[in-house]
Image (cartoon, rainbow over the protein chains, first blue to last red):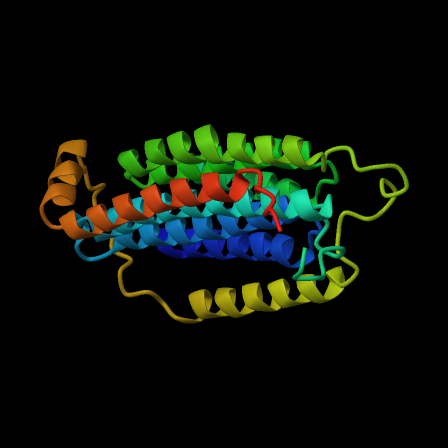
Length: 103
Length: 170
C-alpha cells in the first residue's frame, strides 16, 4: 500500500467515525464536535494529496487546509452560540427533546 | 508506512472513537484533544509544519476550550435527576452507525480499487513560513480578505446569538 493510500484510508476512517457521532449522539455539543472531526479528516486529505501530488511547490493543499481551519473555527463559534441560545429557551441540549421550532 | 505513522494513526483513531463514544461530555472533549493533537502530528509528518502548528493553536487551544465552556454553561455534564440513566446515543443509533459504515466501505473500496498514479517517492517538500506568507499576500490575497470578513462576521454573530435577549415591551 502506498503512503498516499494509507493516509486516504485513515482519513476515510476518521471521517466515518465523526459521521457516526453526528448521526447518533444526543448531545448537541458533541454533534458539533463530530462535524469538526469530519472537517479535520478532509483537511488531512488535502495535506496528503498536496504532499504526494505532482506539484507540491504550488502550496495549494496547504492554503486550502489553512482556509478550511479558519472557516471551521468560525463555524464552531457560531454553532456553540446557537446551542447556548437554544439552551436558554429549552433548558436542554438533548437533540431528541428539541423538536419544536418555536421556543 | 513507518512505525511513527502507525502509532500516530492508532492514537488518532482511538482518540476520535473515544470522543464519539464516551458518556461524559467532558471526557469526550479530553479524548477530542488527543485526536486533534494526533491530526497535528500527522500534518507535521507530511511536511506541513505551518498547518500543524495552526492546528494546535486553533483546535487544541481554542475550539476544545470553547467546547468545554459550552458544556459547562449548558450543564450537560451532569444532567438533571431522572435523565442520567438515559443512553448517550439516539434511539436510532443502529441506523446512523450503519450509514457511516456503508460510507466508509464505499470510500475504502474507491481508494483501494484504483492504483493512484502518484506513488513515486517524492522528496519531502520544504515549505517555509516565508513562502506561505508570500503566497497569502499575493496569490491568495482575495481569499484571505474574505476569510477576514467572515471571521469578523462570525465573531459579531456569535456574540449577538449568545447575548441575553431583551424582552420586548408589548
